[in-house]
Image (cartoon, rainbow, N blue to C red; front, side, top):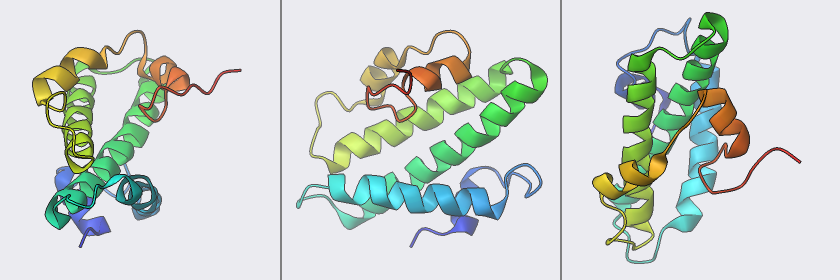
Length: 136
């Protein structure tokens, strides 16, 4: 079962003063709501759990990254690299539980990620990674 401690562990035990348990809890709840309905009937339960975990890890790290970007006035390259890797793994498992195989390879997902500009700007255009935008 996915829990706050498991998410924090996957974030290399990022300190509570950097990312509070409340942030992890909200992202975990949202990840469950986002991922579980997407799972095909043939999806393995452990893959669904991994997709939920990676979604929550990605969204939590994203919240942390946005705070760092705002405070620093830019995104440190190491954080952007980590964020891309987390996104890649999250999307891979998301596609896997939906039954997609051909285009769910990590190499393909990385190739189509294509973040440009600041992370905040990219998220304003597509905060969920689904192609939807937040601007009017």
